[in-house]
Length: 191
Image (cartoon, rainbow, N blue to C red; front, side):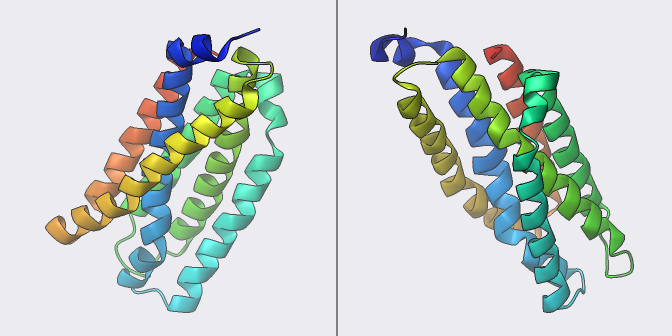
């Protein structure tokens, strides 16, 4: 049994919080806040752009329903798969130049949604592996708080980068780096 003081002193807790903050807080919410506008800027209609967002929502659900994969593959491998899918999705967005290749947006919606959906149950299961017991609810709350703090900065940062550069390319590259770093941090936390 962990005491609350032991949990707060654990580097694993803070690594997991940082991992979730980078993956969903910064990267995930940066992209979510700007994805429809990005597609519209590329020349896609508002209806098509929003439909991509809807497809993303469906695949997030499917990813969350696939959380059992982390039981079979291991937490770190499942998180790596989720991260790789999200990075592929963001790479697809980097190739969007105009509205002539809508398949790139479908790749984005399916891979980013499924990867992001899978990452969430994986990190919570990993934290349960480490911090099982009566304070697990508190640990879950701290993970969500970390994500929330990252979510404060992600969308703002995406807008700032767009305002400075006139493009989302640098923001998407930053998201790819945040996701890769998040995965590495989860491996270090070793649930």
